[in-house]
Length: 142
Image 1 (cartoon, helix red, strand yellow):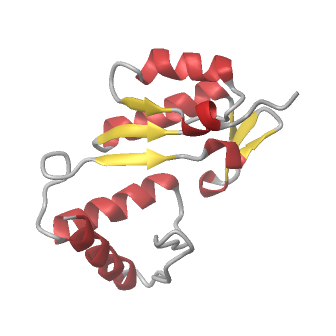
Image 2: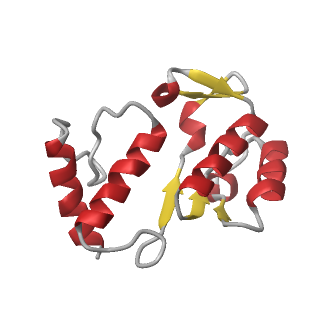
Image 3: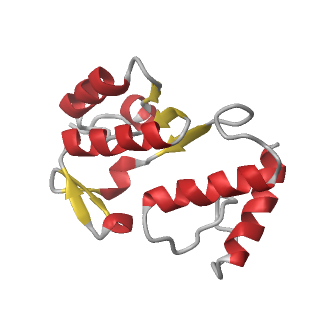
């Protein structure tokens, strides 16, 4: 399934005139207008591969939020460099989970945003799986 969707995703991206070069970690990195657009093209590829999103295939996200955490805000280039508080970013992710069958979010906040993780767990923890990779494997600096 995954391989089929991956190859159909290339076709979807090409049909939209987008880059299909593969990055360091093996994924496509087209220049999309928003984060929701990334999920939309994946949904299109799932359908093109003959699967039903939410039934045959569900989605998981690795936000790697520490990579775009600047001065206490989550700054999303794909959203016009909008800066979100922890709570706002949690609700941004919550909206995506309402639009798409996202079952897991990894590193949804910065590794040092303990209060934010507590809030995110309160809002999303009973709806989806929350994974704290960087939260748990990073060695605290003294």
